[in-house]
Image (tube, rainbow, N blue to C red):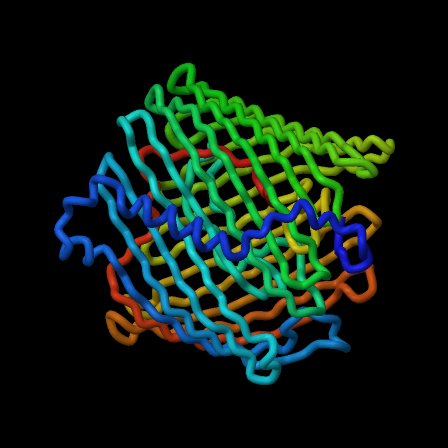
Length: 478
């Protein structure tokens, strides 16, 4: 796995689907389809307009290292971005819901004009309940960006797989577009269906199509297709199981194509409404086209979850993993996850520590299987109704194939202030640094952003639908 710059004529270009122009069209058609479902046809036009929330954001950023290059080669610049957008939210309790956010702006580099580009972005989360038990869902994520480190686009789930919120700010994939300007397009489409046959019993099936395209030939295009069935069944109020399977087909422009299997089983014993214990086993099998090296990974663990209050939940999980490759090499180490999540109106925070293995596919570097440790924390506090402050920090330690080892740190501070009901200003500062035992992969960057947003107030994201639940494998990179 890795860069494709030295691969030359070995590129498997015939496998790359031309999607840059199609992605926006497909995504927009799906959004319009859900906006136009029959329940809306007879709605009064004035009521419909109340569900639209226009906005425009303008920001000025200064970065000391726009490409996260080695310090000897870093380039600084002032970056101006203007992003008009439109949000749409509609909820009919027990029937359907739509949460849509579409924006498209222009990013301008003051010193390096040739790097300027158009930057569309969109999110769609829609659901339709055929019956109180049967629900269909469609999610889509689209972004075009030149960010040297891509923000994580996965959502957050608790220990039982229940959705608890969107990805936290300032969390990034480990892969990095180092040392060169590279505009990428990612489009992730996830249709799913869920059937509930009890208060907590459900069966679901999710399909994911994840397309990554990069304009810079140094970085590899990829396409993921994943099928993800899940069964959650409770024998009684205290004892339940979760069974989940992921079948992934990965097509890469240069790297060996992949067929991946992940199977997870979990038994949960609920002592009382606040305290539960669980045992879990995860098996991973990645089969590559020749000359790729196949491997199996085993990961048993035990854990507990405690709900200190309706807004504060803690999770502790620990175990061990080992990877057995077909070339007789092995990788092993401890697996653990510790988290404390507080979600309240005035103060919210997330504190997590993780360790184990990480599968880095469908990113700019496609680094493959990696052993890692990480820590992450963010806290958001409302000093007043108008003024909020935020602190964020993270650290990652990763071991890759080829004896590569990286340290990555990120720290940031920010504040936002609502000048008027329609106008909010924000100021952010951050520092990123990486060290590696491979020459040319380390970097450091300081950045600052001033942002002003004019938006119609009242929009509230997060329409999830009745009893939505989809399992997840922990720190999963697609």
